[in-house]
Length: 158
Image (tube, rainbow, N blue to C red; front, top):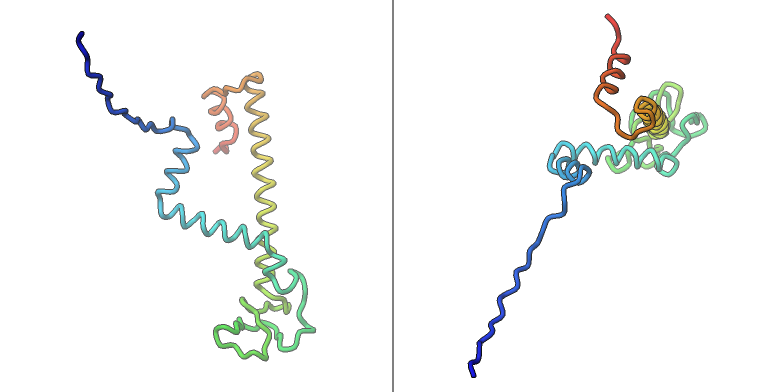
């Protein structure tokens, strides 16, 4: 009786890459650009400051500082960490001609700008989606002709 030696082959582990996706490719391309990362960081700081305006700002956006001792019209910045005397009130960006804290106004203004931007982009997305659906007779596949027609309508005439 013949015996056969059975040897087991080493198992091959195949690591496959997940299929490409438009979102994954876009995020990967953005994260490989230094200027895009810096821009996203700055945008994140501005959005965070706008969302935390009530916490960051010492005064209200329209609050006049006539009752704050040491607050003078058109006073420059006074930051205690940078050597401003402790007996003077701290104003990071100074005081404007109406005796209001400039930093508080900028932070609260960023909040208003963020709200205006979100509402405007939301209206544009809704309007564009409705126009796209209507032009394609409610199909979800707009054609190239539709986009060129819209571009022609939006282009100012000479």
